[in-house]
Picture (cartoon, rainbow, N blue to C red):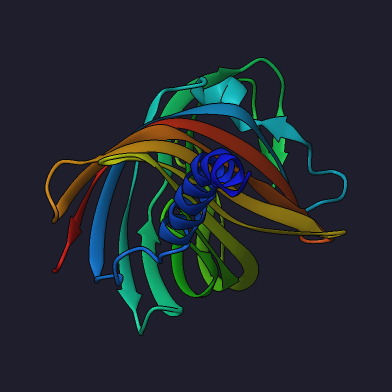
Length: 258
């Protein structure tokens, strides 16, 4: 009887031991992080870009994308990730975005209390971002790493209309706090998926920057990743109304300083 029980249990014990060993292996943390520099390039399309400056009559609300076209336009960013240790990480980002095009307006546009007549008009739109971010790794296993924190975003924005010698410009530089969340899924040797989110919403406006990417580690130092990025946001206050959305196809290289 003991022999039968023993032979019946041994295979199940072996399976259980394998499961436990597999679970323990999955719980092992990923290799310690290294400083990394990422250069990302993209093609951006305007899905929406509406402005009114100032946000009261006689100024009119007009669509910048109707004047400039939907795109695509060049977009890019440079990101420096600097881990302080396995849990605490810093990120620094520079992300310029600009459009400088000519179009034709079928109706008058009143911008900054100045009337631009129907006809050809030159439009410049710029929204550059400079960010410093802190992130805390709250979950890390062999396949998954999740981190969250906060970001200070310095936005340097400009809208300019020009018609002949008539020019009016609205510039604004300010600091916007954002929440940050990042998840990395290492689903196969060398391959990973990445979710990168920074954003915040309030009654006066919102700022959203989110990307989904698929990446491959070419070497232990070099990785390539491509995917889709959405930039969406704007403000609605007494000074201006401005909301825009840009969708981008992006590809980037990351160099890790191991």
